[in-house]
Image (cartoon, rainbow, N blue to C red; front, side):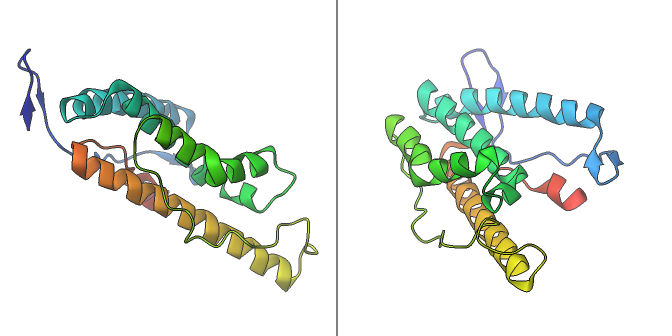
Length: 176
């Protein structure tokens, strides 16, 4: 717990559990909008708390951006496999350079993506509806999940150090 000059109290916490209405395995528009507002509120809180615990505003904005990039890649994992997807090259650029350049500019430690094997066939190289296609797809999804887990672990370490909650809890994943 940290008390500020205006007597606002900030608690170090990670996540809130809430029962959510689901529609066909996806969130309905109302719940999606509520989650979006929660994310905006959470990032504002992270900025306030992070600054209290030693991050600067630029670092908080960079971590907010990293959370958005992680969420975009995690929500569209199949785009690592679908070479024609506009996200395909964008996601690889994130991993190959953009994420760590962004972190370096903010004077934050970088993420070690080198341990993740990024060599796998995409849908361009394998014939559809074959065992090879299914194996290549599963390998791409496994790789995307390793990337997500690596970024989440980085964010979890930030959360521990600065008493923030940048790392997602994964509660919504388990409920859908």
